[in-house]
Length: 101
Image (cartoon, rainbow, N blue to C red):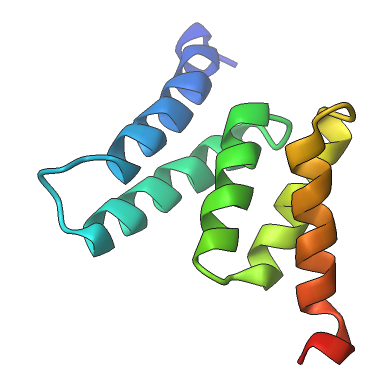
């Protein structure tokens, strides 16, 4: 591993969040670019709390339960005292249950 690869991981997640909030882009571009960069940060480091947290939040807000739920569970595992993470897991599990469909 190079020293620069270790530095790139946190930067990718922050860049992803910045893209999600970039007022110079359309909402679709904000979403696409932000999610892509957060996914890249997660790919480099699956335990990256910031990337996992934001992916869970954004994917859930977009109604993508299938992709949001594993990230919410990972977030809850990484941050067991985080009430928001636990609440999101509960919400997503309810949405994913056959009764919810």
